[in-house]
Image (cartoon, rainbow, N blue to C red):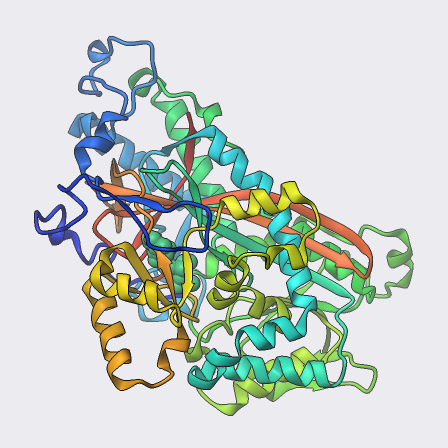
Length: 559
Ligand code: ADP
Ligand code: MG
């Protein structure tokens, strides 16, 4: 998603006493849930309990104030003059190193690079994160990759699982139509490329790392996330006298390098040296620098690797070239050659990388749907294919969480256990016990439609109202949604920076771990985790999208 709307829309509601979560420490069992854990959800999420876990320190900013050898980390105790200095340095660093987004205030900033740039919204300092959970998220990433791949091959599972959703959700229905067409013509994707990001929150009460969702299309911020880690390392180094934090505790973040490598390898597998990588973009994209980082790296660091390719070249081009096209442009300029080659604007396309096409607004007319179908019919490598796209829907996430479903796709029992451990409670709305409970205690649930990009979920009393309305109307609209256990991460103090200013707030964070998967028929070329994205948002805000304007980019400090 691209709009940089207000970052902290619900700030005024912070810690309102009327919130059931803040001052009522009761533990409640969710009724009759199919999942093994976590079934305890605590209402004790007050700021006092979370601050208990913060390392104690006196005010930071005067060297004499430091009386402990332990790392000190309560950003709110940093003195204002030091915050000011650090913020200034962070802004300079971001400007010089391309940690940038288009400025909402500038009309052209979503269309023309180099115009109306502003630093990306960031947290001034990294967020503490347990090393064990970090390792857990990395370890499970290749298993999720494999799972997506297996699910994508089971066309019947995808169609059947989404069949009720199809009736009421026009967008998902169009995606399923394309998928069904591919099944009809028995289309096989030999080369399969996944650039994924699995997002998690660490539930405070159960201490479980629970998956929010798995992104298989348009996983954003591989380019900027690594820069945030570097920014934080640089600040920790520069201010080590004041902060006593070790820059080496911020893990290396190579997301963009590995994404570029995966694209170059997919391009190599396609085996046509004159073909390009095509990025499918939105008509306006304020997060364009994140994308440009990836394609600059692809161009500069991954020239042709094989000698055989060099001989085939006639024009001495040593780089993997990329082009950027909107869906409308692809419809206008694209064609399919009889052998299945996708040609757009006169260029044969080896790899199609989607940074658009995940939201209904990306398809304002039939033209965009024609483009999607054209690409799917071609033999270009699609990241993602329609099947990978569907495998990343919330409905499929919920189906996979049902008993014995993972076993259909994975053999290794340890792998299954590791994946299942990350599943939060997930339910279909035809589960009347859960719907009843969600109406009674809506604060414990999130209602999610089959959408990507942030800003689509339903929370709190709106869950109750929506469920009651659907019950009354008795339509099948409920099939558009899933219900998910609401996760309550620890609330921490942080300093958030946006549009050149910093301010203190209380926040919660969501960790995304990137992973690359490349397969050519039976040969797995790449399957690994690669880097991370920490997103931090004001604790009272429901949604978490950075591009959608709710959160800031962050990094992690392992403890
Ligand atoms: P999207 O595809 O729009 O990104 P997500 O499932 O990631 O959808 O939800 C958007 C945001 O809503 C997340 O980034 C997170 O901040 C919040 N969220 C989603 N699911 C939960 C949950 N179960 N508990 C708490 N917050 C959630
Ligand atoms: Mg998300």
